[in-house]
Length: 97
Image (cartoon, rainbow, N blue to C red; front, side):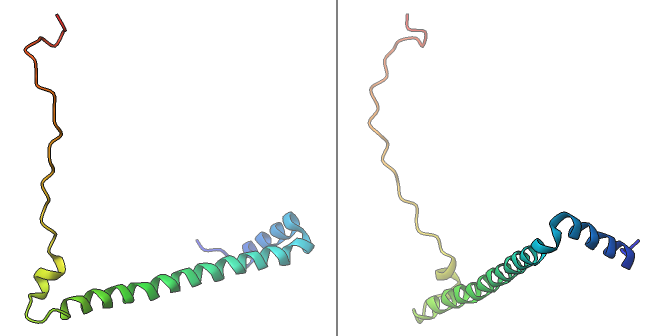
């Protein structure tokens, strides 16, 4: 079941009654600004993604002779953490007797 022309006309009449004829252009302008900013945000995200991929591909090529797969995805070696100096354990029960 799809929306017919009469349902669209009824919805438009209800919107006109709720907002009034004076506020309707302002509401539609605000909706248009929102859609425009949403589209520009999507376009910005699409423009940023190829730049990131291009930069990642350019980095391994800068070191000739190195394996591109190993250098692109190799994680840094783990650094050992020094344990904090703990107080010497006593031979007392946990209950404190």
